[in-house]
Length: 203
Image (tube, rainbow, N blue to C red; front, side):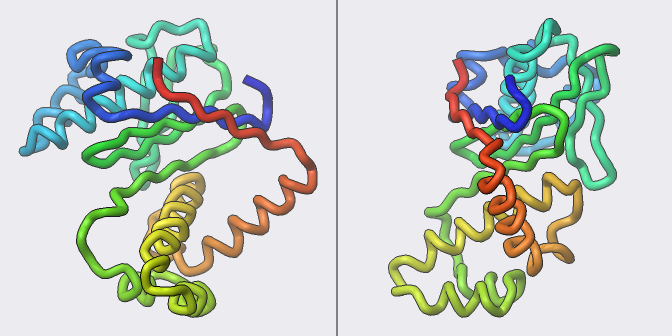
């Protein structure tokens, strides 16, 4: 992996556990197993195991570390990070999951966030936007034809969530100002021509 690259892998929880590490192999520590068991519903346990499976296999692509040997810690707001083994490269990663999709993004040296959402779930989107988006974003959303608003809402939402997760911050207070800052960072990097995005499914 080169500096400035982001590698992204994704798949359904079932496919990841079948193609990467199975549930028993993905949950290495007693803490991970206990957290898995605290989930009441099986789909939630499946998602958690799949995120651990995908993270371990993805990180081992870029370091001479066996998938089971990675040690993780959580930041103040739950963002995962590498805690070991000693001497591992300066990889950064982030995870997101829904009932049907798990994603893991990996990069070198700088923080990263990723977010996935179920866009066909029921619920009002514009009303939520009025609570969490900036006035200009709400206006842009309302200016679209009704049939396009939902897709644009989730474009905004996932961008905000991924950016906030990269910062390691809580969502509620930061959300209204995130999009403008993320766009500014993206424009600066585009001018430098240094960023590359490689999207790969898990193998």
